[in-house]
Amino acid sequence: NKTARIVKKIFKISSENIKKEKKDKNCEIIVEKSGPLAHIYFTEKVERILKSEIEEMTEGFIEKLINHEGIEFACFVLKEGYEICGKKGKIILDENFKIKEEKGTLFQYIIEITKIKVIDSLKEIVCGEESGDILIFGAVLGKNRIVNFEEQYGAHGGIGGMQNYPFLITDRVIDEEELTISKFYSLFSRERD
Image 1 (tube, rainbow, N blue to C red):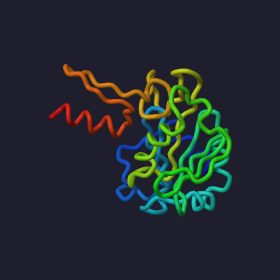
Image 2 (tube, rainbow, N blue to C red):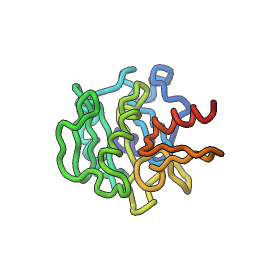
Image 3 (spheres, rainbow, N blue to C red):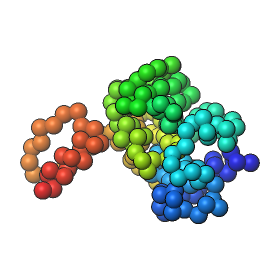
Image 4 (tube, one colour):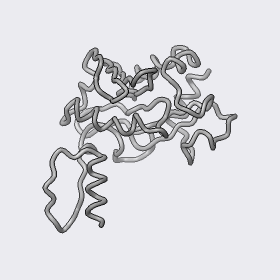
């Protein structure tokens, strides 16, 4: 069944290149993993597929996915915005990634970081043109423990724990606060120059 094949790919197989248009169209899905983050691409269309289209193609899959014990939450594209949903709730965001509607306590287990910081950190990756049709994040198992989708002992690229705190070793003092991933990149670029 299609759901079983998708779950198997999430936890077992990764491909080399995430551009859907360059992939073999005989493959129904592509899963790209980096630690506790995975992008799921459906090859039916080159452009990103809406959540409603995924629900039509894979009846019951989204519900099974977000209720899987290894998943903390998933992100989807909507007709007019985005949705982040998991076992504990959901957040509907507009096209500018601002909260329109919220139910439950979606980020209940993500400690040491506020909901707004989580959403700000997610914006760039969820809104990216090359991002998956579904983005999933591994379950938070406690302080500094998270499910990875690839075999490794550390975690990076997800949300929760110490991986949310970027660092840079430099010989100069940098007076910056509230660093997000995108701010860290611009700071790193300035330091390199």
